[in-house]
Image (cartoon, rainbow, N blue to C red; front, side, top):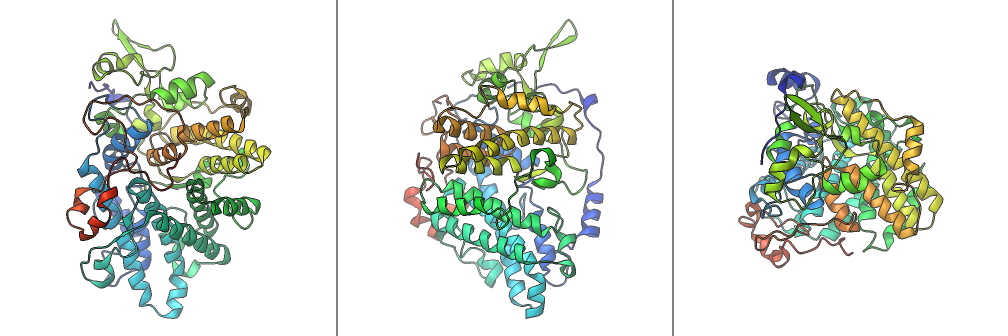
Length: 528
């Protein structure tokens, strides 16, 4: 497909040597690779410093945009017969980036196992001083491991990491996905309780090593509770106990504080959300990741069905109208309009200038894009769903309105990071938006739930395409139309990823899960 010609004179010139980035890391954080002894604080920083969380080129190009974003239609893609075919090498790379401390990810499991081994050898006094690192690392591990479960189902976990734990190589069995979710939910509760009871970590160096939340125990407590809420809602259609647990959490916000942003008027994404910021101003532009995979067009359903009919105030910072050059003069398209999902690849190539693309400041050229861990908007969408399903319609509407408003603020925040100058909507603008018939919280309970799920999917967008795909499978909203492709076995998107060959070829325990290793097998929470 043709690539959009980007005028390089419009790009922000950023020239920061890689060596300076390494120097900053060396100055500010303990490097576990350079310490003569295993160092828990250094391991912790390494777990956080994860390019599978940040929108780095490799993560965007090989996993989000060409895989899960296609399956959830949260980004555009070439309408070819291989559109829904999984790339074994790319997903294998994502898989190993979770298990091994190398490549494009931090190797969460390997590093956490190393932390456990080091922790076990400490004195009781040192363990008490270092426990904060272990609890925070556990939250990150369970958060990332749940994404692995959401993509594949059963995964090696409880006995994985034998090389780090016992200096031996031993094939790990695949743990049951539902059992793992129970472990994560319980462990997140334990971590949140720990952070709520702790009062100081000044002597441990935690504040210095925490490159994500800067040592705030309150934010770590909220982060743990919020991921726990996400997982509880994800299993709420298959586990009756989830309702009681979620209801108890929402009824006692002092005991279960969340990443919910507080009042909309005081919401600030930079301080309210859990975001992994770049360590320096040096980061490759995401441009190539979007253009190489033809993911820079506005997604059909998101723009044409969700945003444009509602005159969504996010449109100016999420999309660019684009246009054509006529007699040497660039003429923008008159309206925000996305290319139809039904266009063939030939039609896409011949007509793309007539349709909107992603905004350059917010996405394509934004070298300051943070990694999105969890936002107040997502949490309030989760709260709105719980209230609506389990008996508090007034609270549901408040949470929904907060979620939509926070999503608007969030995308203007991203736009500002990229140098965008679009004026933020006024409170009057937001009120009008929330009153639009396409957005207003009204109708039957089923219609309200459809609003919640559709707006949450729109909020996730391409940067959180993994969460968009998981929630689409769980809720079956929005009601997307997928063009059936002609490649045998890949006519439609999968229900899960199949295990990569790098695992199936070498793990002798694969036979135990071979029968359900199909792209049509559903994850245990996918029952609608």
